[in-house]
Amino acid sequence: MEIGLAMGLSLAMWREYIPVGRIIGVDLSIAFDPAPHLASGTILITADATKPAFLDKIKDYTFDVVIDDGSHMANDQASTFKMLKPKMNRGGIYVVEDILALDTERKRFEALHPNCEIIDLRRNKGRFDDVLIVYRF
Image (tube, rainbow, N blue to C red; front, top):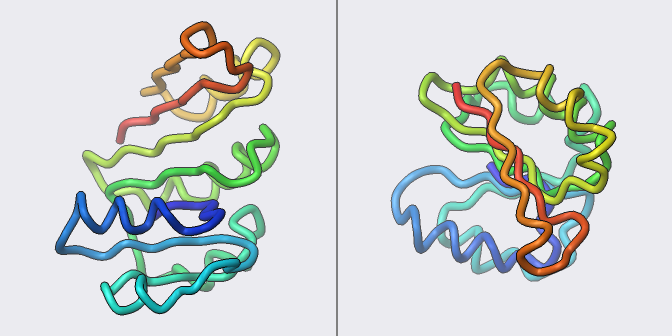
């Protein structure tokens, strides 16, 4: 599942990388033509992944991979992780992209799950938010 789709380009990339299997894309609004993605068997969900009502839309699913590329705000990222943590399969990974304030939020993200890896790439391209957090289950 990918949270935060923007123009939906990553959905095609995921389908190419994972030709068979369920890909779920989630966004507050679908601002692109969904037809090509639906034809490939991708499931699109319009929802706020930070709200408990989102769980009703995904109640039958568990996940091997979740990528949170949504709001990029620490409160939202932490809330979404806490809600989805019980839905992660053993061996799965949960990736949070684009951490806006790693220096002030590091301990918060580390406290969410014991198997936490922080990949800080801010110096590589000079982007202040080029940080990934990977949780392994």
